[in-house]
Length: 374
Image 1 (tube, one colour):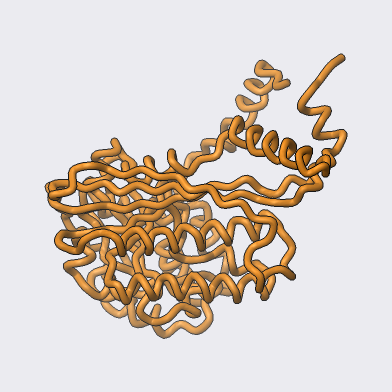
Image 2: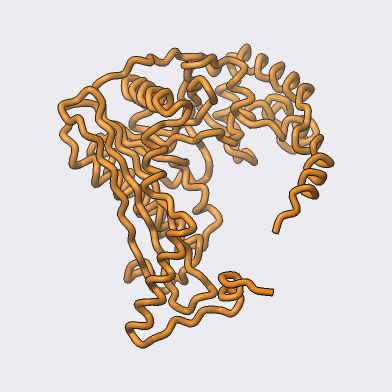
């Protein structure tokens, strides 16, 4: 049981560390950014740098250009998919996991007036015959969930008539950072699958994007690091003072509400393993209450009309959702697995085991947590 009075004292003692004053760091970053904007050769210097220690984006045009985004988008349909899971329970000998995929289809100003909400659970003891040798872990479940989200998004959008604008919207990143640290077998299998699904979306010409609320990315900040150290990245003492800042700090220097940045190309190591047409790009969008990050594949980034449509749709969804895209929020509600849902899952699992005359073995620690007594 949490002793709340002690927690209050602990938090009060840490207040200065939890809420530091970064005014000095902001001033340094702003001055550096102004020098970057004024340097017409900076973009070419960035492109020429070999093996930077952190992801450094590339772009074309004016780096601090603020582009107004229209707020009156009509006649479109948004499809959104999200996933949740029940991880394998090491306290239960019946090893399986559940992935719950939630989806919504929200039409606006079209002949189809009814929204569609759906939730589909999938239970596995392993994931695919060719993956039998890979042990079930939380990492594997997370990778499977993302694969299901992409596949479901592709399947749903293919069922919609293309007589009006459509956008497929995901939560999170199109840059599969989570694969970078995985075992080679998992990395290769899932990266190939993700890329194949992204490529199918490209072939179907389905406008798609992912939205990240309160992003912590530092790709634009890395430009400031390069400027502060004059591209000598070994001189870390010259840029260490801005290490705690993030991209949205920089974007606030030039973006006003209902504006977006130009499009940047992500150049992380994992992005170099994507097909050229789906290499991740991104832009920042001020939705009024926050600055979000919107990620799109290369084929969309190269079409200014599609970029404008994506920005308008995400802004419209954010305004309808009071700061966060309503389709994403609804898809999450369809997908989320709550505590009682987990209890139900394991209750049914135990019941089926009893019917099969194979009583599931549950650890005493788990039983003790479920029924405490003194």
